[in-house]
Length: 186
Image (cartoon, rainbow, N blue to C red):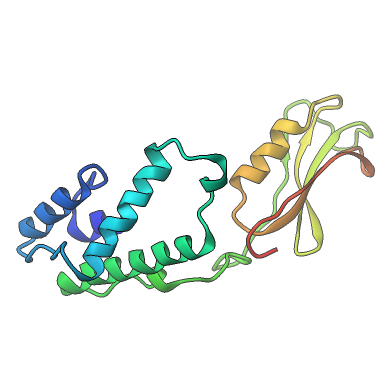
């Protein structure tokens, strides 16, 4: 995606080597030397990517070993920097950013969605909360008797800051369900 942005093209993923070479040429820049250096390494990790995306990997390979993942990150960063260098531009700062989004830039707000028909003072309402940095934040109020699972799943899927738990309460304090969450940074 970084190469597509830098070179002003789309869909480099399929036939990556050929399409990237063509994009460089269209930008008046010599094509990368795929036989050595970072570009040879890019082809190797591109082969790994194809295995993960299109292959039928055994369960124990679905998550790459740490050394393999770190190597892929290192090579990707070097290639992105090289693309921008060859174009005479400065690579974006995010290329070397290893920070964890514990607190998004510009701050963070917490809000509560109150679903239709819910009386916030109903003692049987369903409260969906998440725990962030040791505090609970109310995310959603649902009608009494609602199964909280769908709302809990949505929080886990969509949250980018490192939360540690998602809980559902009946009323203020009657715990219905609790999911411990392990995220990078917790």
